[in-house]
Length: 209
Image (cartoon, rainbow, N blue to C red):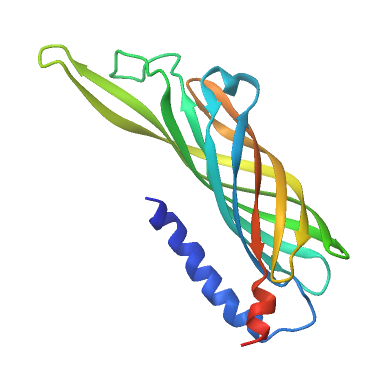
């Protein structure tokens, strides 16, 4: 499942790498991004979700010679799922199950570099789906059948972060607010993703090839 979602990003990275190799004059033309952290449910989302260890993957592609950049990012957030009402066709509620997001956000951002530090903000929109567990119980055979419900979700996301340059890569910390346009358990989906990680600077690597 994850490989199917990340394959388009891999192809995009390959195509952009060829393009960036021929360009000069901007030290932050292309970064890859890999982060870990938590996505904190807010508002009524906290009624049915609790944060678990999460990951995110993305790209930063510089636009022009200023600080603008394009920021596609896949959020692979995980949550503890505590069901409030059973889904249609099911009798039992799930307690302490696992919900996982597969959400792509494509944002426009701006980065300001000051010596080894950089500060950035971004805003964008996208979508994908969120898997929530379901449990069917056969009272005669005493068997439990586990399944997942696919919840389609459109999103908008805005946030900001700070980076520190290590030369060929940047350490970063990022926080954002994600708003979902669909509901789960008849309640809104709103979270605050917080992540830290590393952004290898492919601009410098490609310039040496």
